[in-house]
Length: 307
Image 1: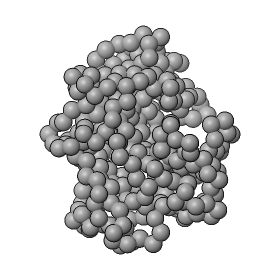
Image 2 (image 1 turned 30 degrees about the vertical axis):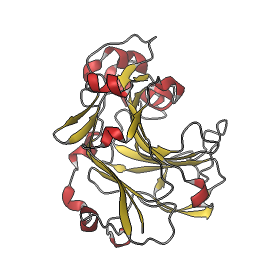
Image 3 (image 1 turned 90 degrees about the vertical axis):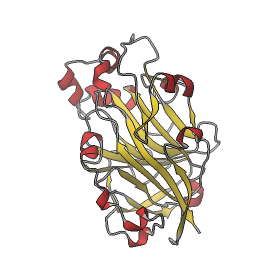
Image 4 (image 1 turned 180 degrees about the vertical axis):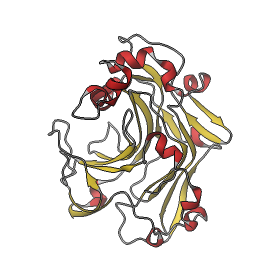
């Protein structure tokens, strides 16, 4: 991944790369027309302490708006909450459209900044109603972490070869996932420091973006920067394992990952030290001003597919 606010997910399910043409271009002029605002508590997704609100409520409260030609998606940084509530108000957007393969490029001017307890993610997946499961987490981590984490999950049996990337401890090269599977299931990779949180925003360098991407005619074969992760199939049909992707953008709090990381010294445990609190939900509920900078600012999201 480039050390800029561009996140590039290369065409995992494509075969030999060829010329690409743009098929989606979501920006300030049309962004909210192309995404569904999920109106539900995050407790039904990741056991998180966030209440996602619908589009009308999100726009009325300023959680979703256009600022200086950019799409801004934030969280409530004004109100305190009870720990028995469904959580701090936030947004979870899911694209109406889906794709099976391609080159997905997100241009972020700003990614969420801690706030201890935060868990933001930009990812693609099939959705809860599908009979099969595919998920790729493109930009995701929690709390004060400064290194991005990429993860790949599929309900298909799928082993991979790792051409580039550092596997997260306890994760494997078998990307197979089941609802009641082992904790080590799936393929997950640590990126280098500076690829998440404020360090990511600090390294926004448009001059590192490939010229052919700026011109709208990307050719990833010609790019000189090394990707953060590069995988190839070992015993896996990528076309079957990774498909029917909706784009998801969300920010939750605490839950099964950020909550553990908040206090557990087997993870970072940095937030327990910084806040003096042993309770992620209590901290998030009582400290709205910590989340003033916990927002996404998006120039565009584009999908290119082979001609």
